[in-house]
Length: 580
Image (cartoon, rainbow, N blue to C red; front, side, top):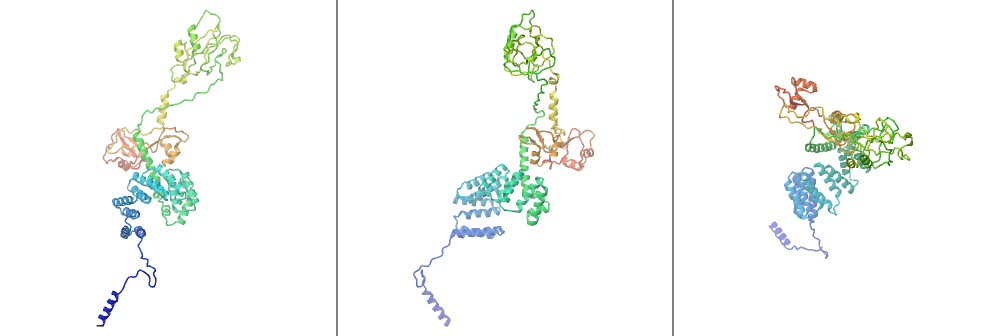
């Protein structure tokens, strides 16, 4: 009975309770606590990202869904959810989540930047570039340097190294002390073998009072490439002592330098250059008889004479005369013998001198006749060469030319005259002599020199015109590089990571040889085939070429009972590792 009474009293007491909106004894209202949905959503997002980093994906998904319930119109919720889908491999759901975030706020720079990273990861380089550039173009966006760096890293993934360098430079312009950008650009220069620019960027990184095993490893690799072995060893010791548990220390300790990010980038750049080289080589058409132009230097004159008049002297003189010089002529003494008609002499006076050209089969020139008794010597003739007895020798090539022919040849400017021994002229008579070809100049066989130049850079192996012994073996293409302006053998060896001595050996060159623009330089040994002759055996070929018989059989896919057919080629290199 007593418990029932207590229950009844309690019920009556509850029925008499009222809700008050002010403090007891005061008119001050009570402030009701309201939930900040945006703040709660951001808290859930931060918690979800922590769970995602630790691998607890279920808790991450739960917190993201709660955040979506708190603020369904917040872009951060949707691009965070897209990031979750991206991490778990749900690319379609991630794309839809990014598009939903952009539908809510199209000019949200964080959404655009994250969407660009996602598109780059699914091989959508052009779309990713558009999203990054849209984010950068927003004036209120403060992470411009980060977006430029993301854009540069994306460009590297698609072998767009030139644009990657530009984007890295833009990132440094917006944030000059950004450590990751400085190291990444230095790594790109290292991959391009531009070691001095890479060193300058690392020095700039050191000036910011920052240090990291990543930067130290890159500095170690650069010092090694530059031949500064002692400095490189000091840097390696610093990495091992200061960061013994880092990936960089592990790579140095276990000699796994080739697997580091910088060497991987260097190899990626090299492969991109080789692929570009293959495309250029496939489009180019090789000619067995290339056109080579040889320019010969003219031999210096052995005589300093500048006169056309020789006072009974027999040595040969070389004279260069102005094109438009016409000598003054006085009437000569009458003579019963006339060599040249008057019309021919007048034509000779009006003609210009003819240039001596190596492309002409014969050399001809017309010289204006000089006065036999000049009142004053011409200004171009030394007085010592004028004979007292007026015995004048006129030197000319060829027979006298008609007036119409001399007018056609008036466009030339210079000529070279050769004096030949002749009888002195009588009474100022003009005598014409026929030109004599110089055997040393005109009978040289230029074709031999062309062949020598062509064969000098040609591979010593036979051309790949013969069929392969095994038709299933595809013929190989020898990689090569065409010399461009400003390049030399050393720069090519650095660019393709090939030893200079190997380049000289493969191309039949010496260190003193000069390579000209347009020359083809082989980047690997061109002697990759052996032409089978009658009586050859695999043992003899392997012994002669210093390779193993089983390697020859494996490279050429031969069976033990194969018969060597003359007139076929055998591959002497491994086709899987022949290229650079």
